[in-house]
Amino acid sequence: MNISVVIPLLNEQDSLNELHDWIAKVMQSNQFSYEIIFIDDGSTDASWNVITSLSSKNPNVKGIRFLKNFGKSQALHAGFEKALGDVVITMDADLQDNPDEIPELYNMIVTNGFDLVSGWKKKRYDSVISKNLPSKLFNWAARKTSGVKLHDFNCGLKAYKLELVKNIDVNGEMHRYIPVLAKNAGFVKITEKIVQHQARKYGVTKFGMNRFVHGFLDLITIWFLSSFGKRPMHLFGALGFIMFAIGFGFALYLGIDKLFLNPTGRLITERPQFYISLSTMIIGTQFFVAGFLGEIILRTKEDKKRYAIKEKLNLE
Image (cartoon, rainbow, N blue to C red; front, side, top):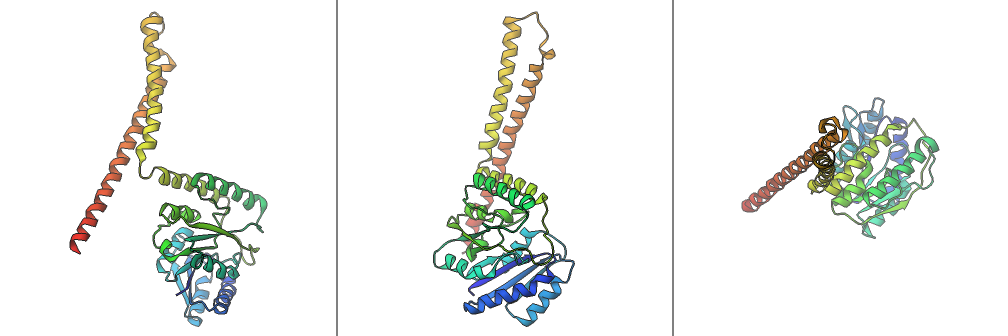
């Protein structure tokens, strides 16, 4: 199979027939073997009925239905597990992504050898205040933090090698950072393509301003995992050393001042520097302990993996 088109959706009954016909037309005109996988993420409208109807008419249409809304990441993960095509295309179900982009995305993966091609909606038809400006800020922060030079991390239109989607775990709300997950998994041939963005034709957007708050929190998480996931002591040890050094410095100053400079002055416990010293040394010690625990947990997991590999080799 050439292409798997994975489409997560929530309450998009009005656009599904038109989207299906458009994709099928593109596939047939380019003689691609294909499948379309719709993932109904807990829709409360007639979306699943439309998917069932499309599947009965077109054997290339498959559907996955969630009993409740789990989120776009979980929907994509389910679609990736079922995908069989050499190239996996993801797109949104709201007709804002253009299926006519699929052939070129496919060729960039197959002919040019890229692992991932991300769409870049350079010209957008969204609200400037609620989407465009926050999106630009979010993408700038993602570029600086991750080192992946993409202009539009959140574009739903992307193309992947099948091997890539089978080797990454998309959970939480990490769908925004699939290129970063791919890079961390060793797939470094990542590029982008300017794609056409279309105004929403039916319904309303399912994402509010809170997605940017969640997005930045997820960005911090993925930055930490990619930078210190394999060496937590490097972060917590450095923070612990800094905090402990500050506390020890204050304690040393108080001791010298009380013993030699001003022995008849206030008690050490009556001075604010004492509590700063005490607090920072305790916090520094806690950072060290967190780093040690992280290293122990990491080593334990790695040992289990090594034992599992040895056992597998012995069995073979």
